[in-house]
Image: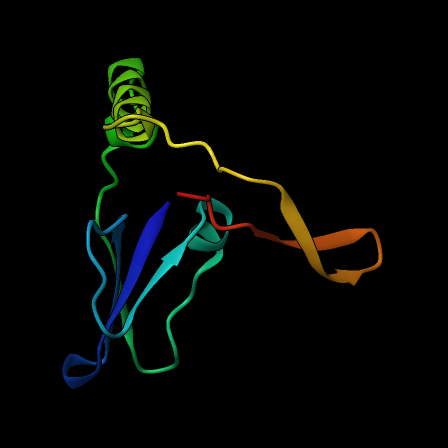
Length: 105
């Protein structure tokens, strides 16, 4: 992936490695489109070297991401199950809208 940035004041288009944050006048491109990119007439196109090592995430990065997702999905407190029998209050096709009875105290 690559990021294309236009510098209108200098009539320059800059194609470089994928940006880490969003900015106005920046566009992310796949490798195929980045290879075929041409600048408008009268503009200069600068191609910054792509860091090949950062193209594919390492297995350490993927494992760290998976661990973070698992940790975020882990319940933090006791799991509260719904109480009471659901009452059908609406239907659309095979889907039903249920409302739970209030628990008796």
